[in-house]
Image 1: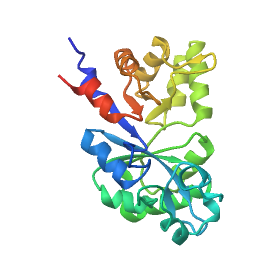
Image 2: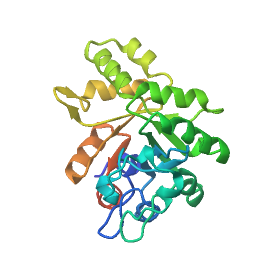
Image 3: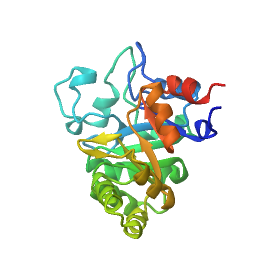
Image 4: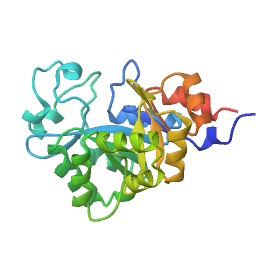
Length: 250
């Protein structure tokens, strides 16, 4: 019998639901992900040179727009005119939050410049309850949290995740709980080199510290099921439609 956890685990659509004619991190990719049944949109924030927060992953425009230019060197007007494929444009964070006002967004701050521009949009729209603020850079994440007028959901940066891992490894449960405070979640790969984040002990420490554990980027149905059986609270995937079929179908 399928575990109840299969229906409880959050499915995070990594950059939306990308398809042949729908590029990543576009409003259409987000709409398609939500139509497929995703719980959360996982996305990335870069900033223009005039301080506008945009939904975009890369630090430059080469891969998606075939433009040899850094994102941060472009004005917001330049960026709004860029076609990233099949007539799709790069949305601002404000456009995305207004287009999907009740949807949960997982925002990964990709640069220091993105901190202020992201905070400004969250404050303007009072979107605190609809976002989870994250960054691999712990300093960047903490700075964003300090600038916000209200608390938001947040996932720990790499430095904190490593501290949590080693506290778990040597059995320092109270230190683990102390380190976990101030974070809603950690978002991790299954492994990084010799470090494994899918061990029962590590997952148990997360549970005992009220810390959600989300795994990325998981595209295999068998791996999705294994992680959910182990206790995963979230699955970040490129194929949220496949995750829905795997974890929610009866």
